[in-house]
Every structure is written in C-alpha cells, then in structure tokens.
Image (cartoon, rainbow, N blue to C red; front, top):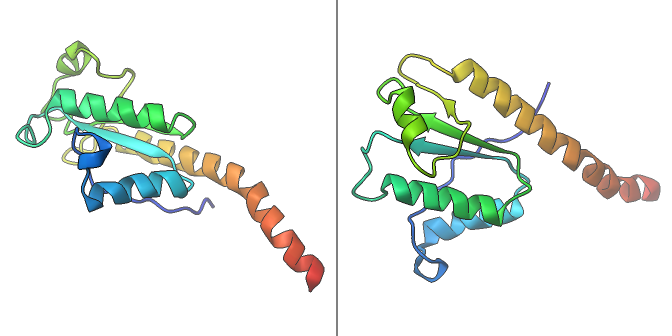
Length: 142
C-alpha cells in the first residue's frame, strides 16, 4: 500500500512574482516546502481563454518545470473527449508526450491512476530515509 497526499493547488496566472496574489503565493509555498510531484493539467478547449490562454498555460508550465526540475512530473491534457489528438500534436510548444484524459468517458484514467501511484512511490522512496533519520535519534533517547 502506498500512502500519500494529493493536493489541488490554486491556479496560477501568467504574470511575474511581484504581481501574484495570496492564493498563487500558496501554490508556490506548497511546491517549495511539501515533498511533491506535479501533474500539470492543460485545458485545450479554450473554455478558460479569458483568464488563461493556451500560450499562458504553456508558459506557466515551463516556468514551473524550470523552477522545480527534480519533481516527478506528468503533463496531462484534460477533456480529451472534445479535443482531437491531431490538435494536441499540432500545438506549438506543447510538451510531448502528454497523457490524454477525460473524466466524461474515462479515457486515460487507469493510466493516470498508475502514474499517480508511481509518483507517490517515488516520493516515498525519497522521504523514507529522511523519516528514518529523523526518528532514530528519538528512539536512541527512549
């Protein structure tokens, strides 16, 4: 059994750090301090284009990947039931490969589950020695 936490952080807008709001600051704080993996979810439907364009999503993803290069990472395209594979492959700058998922029809969800378990296992393997090191002095004093 693999135990871990999954956290959906507040979204980020494509703007510089000085202009970020408190919610965006919490996202960065979590990524800096919590042992974590990142599942970056792209929405290629254009439904959020008033706040975040597709290019904004790509830029934000690239900025996060650059800031947190050692994190286990998975790029995901959501709502793939309404976005063609050809469209995904033709978007310039979009990272490939990308896991295509749909909550509507279940596409890619078994693979996503496997990937999340693998990411949690990776984090556990990194944290186990740290945890053991932290509790050993306590056991010696007991």
